[in-house]
Image 1 (tube, rainbow, N blue to C red):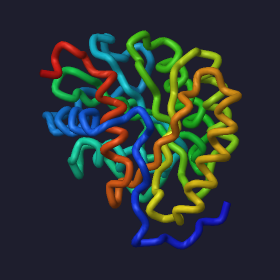
Image 2: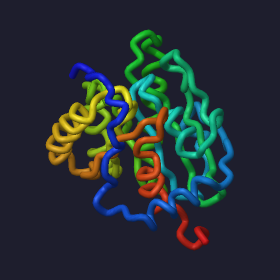
Image 3: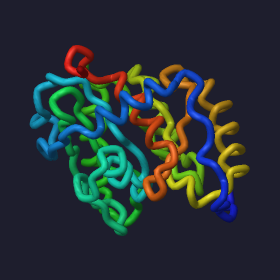
Length: 230
């Protein structure tokens, strides 16, 4: 899909049908809390104990995972960002005030990395998603300018097989038109109907201008420890 010109006057789009003002406020309050880096993991044997519910972020290299984590938490340097794809080479864990763990997985599809490195990162991410009982949802990030790629399809198949609930989150929607966004969402929604582990709702976001960030916060707030959200 060719990226259409951005319409600066275009609205960010409606919230998901099951998200209301109370949900938006709950998400805002949760992600305004303290968020700290916990650990970076390079091998499955070093994964931390699964004490908190976790939400993971996965996607192709340079899809904007770290930028999205920073936008969600309102920090600019919490997650490391770079213009060079493939910089996240470990699983990074961030504790959101002891009620929710945010997990940044290594990006996939980076062709310039050595094959041995790519296999190592893929094995690490696969071991995580298949063996993490407290993983509540995986946000599968897709660059809205390009749509789903074969590597994204392979990840969906893996998540279906592992019965891990995942939700498509479009990134960089500020770089395409509202019509291109609607067309891509419609295409992906029809495709997701064939994937048993996929959440049907697609969220469109921009770390740059904040589109969709309140809605994504609201969705993720539902995954946190409920008796600690007072």
